[in-house]
Length: 65
Image (cartoon, rainbow, N blue to C red; front, top):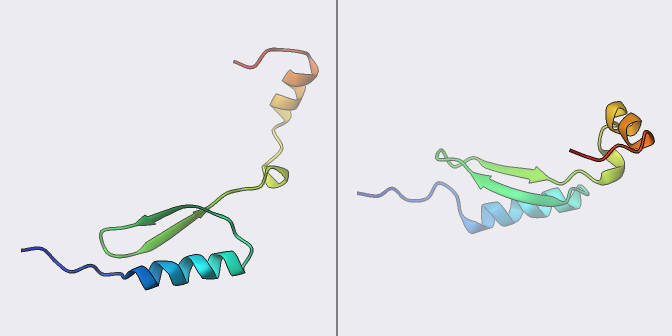
């Protein structure tokens, strides 16, 4: 016998609406087997961590691997 869902569409809509209100862009939504809703956000390019190695490599004119 199957179990009923532990979440509803309204729960997901509420979570996404809250994330967007906080200024977070939603990239992916996951729902665990226990009903937990996980929202993954996109990281804007200007907020990505600086990689000194890649800066050095680009400065030397090296091709990306």
